[in-house]
Amino acid sequence: MIKATIQNSPYCTEIRFPCTETELSKKLGELGMNLEHLAPMATVIEIEPSELSALEDCEVSLDALNYLGKRMDGMCKTERRQFFAVLSCDEAEIGYGLKNIINLTYNLARFTLIEDTSDLERVGRIHMLSVHGSLSESEYKNSDWLTAEGRKLLDSGKGIDTEYGKLYINEDVPFEEIFNGTTFPAYYSEPDSVAAVELEFFDQTELVQLPCEDIAIRKALCRLGAESIRDCTVIVDSIEDISEEWIGKICKVEKTKELFELNRKLKSEGVCLNREQPASLFNKEVARILRENDFTVSENSGYISVFSDGKEAAKIFGNGMISAPDNTSDDTYFEIKKIAGTVSEYCSAYEKAAPLKAEGLSGNYRCLAEFNGTVLAAKHTEYGFEFVTWDRTFDGKAVCQGNYYTDYASAKENFAVRSGMVDKNKIFSTKELEQLEKCVNFTMRHNGDLKFDDCDFLKKISEKISENIPEQQNEAPEMSM
Image (cartoon, rainbow, N blue to C red):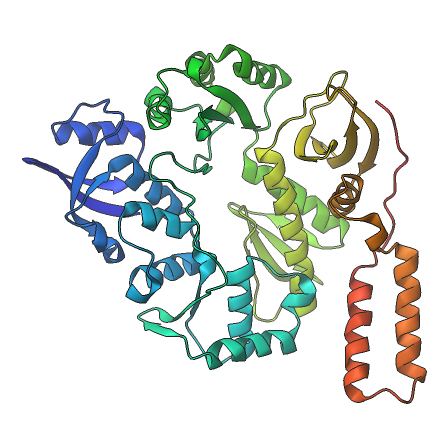
């Protein structure tokens, strides 16, 4: 939340960001400005949090300040402290102005914030998560590697003292300009939206989430420099779980470009009230998978309680975040975390994916990815998710040779190999992995010439192989459609 005193001389008012277009229009009236100004600018007199004080006495775009408020609201506590630490540190050299501050929200990987330097393993884990965004299960549990990375970071002597902790600048991670100062990068901030539509004009894009206030569409066109929707390419970016009839109506906007009319119908007919909310889709799916893995699940308001051996082992929230009691074992915690992370990944991808367009295809499939003529699609049913990889036909209008999966990881692997993103000759089959594991274990037990470091190295290889051997194959026969 941002609280700012805004001036359009001689008028002053306080605005809290983020706010709706209706709320912002009301404030423009208090500033003596046109209520439907498509690019309102005004001067910041005072602002909270204080870390944004560089914006004081500056004329800023109120829409950009509203966008920053949405980005900040989407941060977790750790990201927010990291963000504030960078803003309070002159050595970070992100530059001044609202444009650079918005870009910082997309570049937090360039900075590592360490609040407690006493635990080297934890320091290494925080640093690696900052740089890479995520870690595999084996990396997350690799104490020696994380401790070494933590020691390397602290021994670099490059930590900058801030009131939030020591801040390190990761020089190998470039600071990228995601926000160009005019058009806003796509950001899904409206939980009650039914669909997202991308407007493209001369290589610039703006995302509009529907239903919305009409002025939001007009502002998007203004930022693009387009006089009307007719001048733009309209692309349906994503559609939530609604009826097939409404999916068809929304997709037609790509040809008709009647975006204002579609927006009016979505609002007047209350489509958003009839759809399943994204959080409930995640909750339903993660609860199903957990039960299949012998956990007991209890759904509460805002979170899911997960029980193992009669004791609560974790709480899972709608955004995929997990909290666990101190007495939860590491193995149990990592198993729950892995399940929640995987389900969150494909539920989020599914919710943002556009319908798969292919002649003769029945069923509400959505296109998760497409590369080199190969498609990865998903369909949600009352029994869970079905994932499919298909080849596009020669003319690109239809799909054929479908491989069907209920396991997301298997579907992704098949897509990567089938599309040519990964060379299949570099992938070991399950049988080959099993034989390799046997050979490594045999060598460890019977080769008396091995040194301690060699044995430790082979042990880690064996563990890595074991982690990558699936419990059961999920192969499916190819089918033509």
